[in-house]
Length: 111
Image (spheres, rainbow, N blue to C red):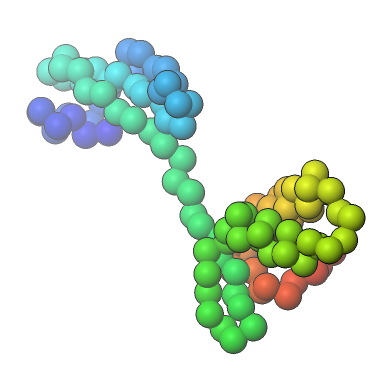
């Protein structure tokens, strides 16, 4: 990392801890040239998953939209909400395990 004060290239990490929400790591770095401290936040960059519709449109994967669709499809059937949540969990896991970022809407779980 380049020091914002003196543009030196070498530094050392003095302190490292998670943020309160746990979604980032806060590091305090000290420049080895001028000795000044800089706080740096590191976050995981999430690349969104897209669902490719039959007509070619692309929409971000939406867990809630999937859940609503399953509820609507099963509203007159004796399917417990826990079972629908398990199906959505499984589909979301398949999407996250896929190396592609665009998944066809008609893709079956075993492909």
